[in-house]
Length: 294
View 1 (cartoon, rainbow, N blue to C red):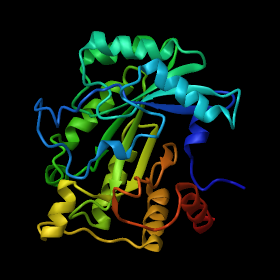
View 2: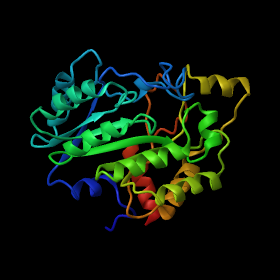
View 3: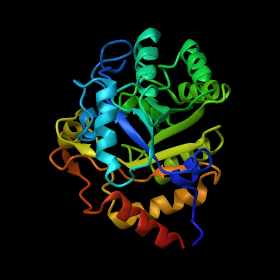
View 4: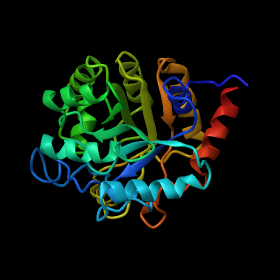
């Protein structure tokens, strides 16, 4: 069956033979939007531990976390290779020498064939991109930028502390060095209409981006966003599962088809999640969406 869009496995198949798995790493870094470098308090929706898998523990070294991840996944695919995924907080928020040490430790592990670094668009100096460009001559290197929205009003509302222009500048500087480039976007942010989200899709489609991640806005316990909604300061649309499927179908038809879609949904731990509780796993959502598109 012909796929209705290019997915992440299609993207990886363009660069690797065989099974490739990302291994999440928490390198103990902070975020410039938390520690006062550019802001405090962080993004209004964020609890970072909601993103980390169980094998990813900050107290372990990079090598120990990779080994734990390999054991976790090797039960299914004994011969797979790995991308070290610096996922937690901002994966470039440190001095260059420390980053070189972390990335080098990851790449020295057996079976690791590249890096994926999650970061913010305001945290990638040219000196770092130049170093990563050199690494990319021997390894696969991808930078994933948290963009969340293309609308500056929304970015201010959720306390991102950067603008869309910051995103486009970072993407351009990254792609110009031959580095693989991805974006992360949140659907259903406060105040955004369907037209707003489609405009973001159009703007992303015009960028030199290879992969995009979408996921639904999640309201997590203890976040500023949760408090703002409970107090009536903000409101968000409570998408039903069927409505969100329709939204994602519209995005697939609108997005530049050369851009791979890594995901449409995210699943935070049940004990943290207030909404939505749709009762479907990520792979089940994809199956439902693909059926709708074909």
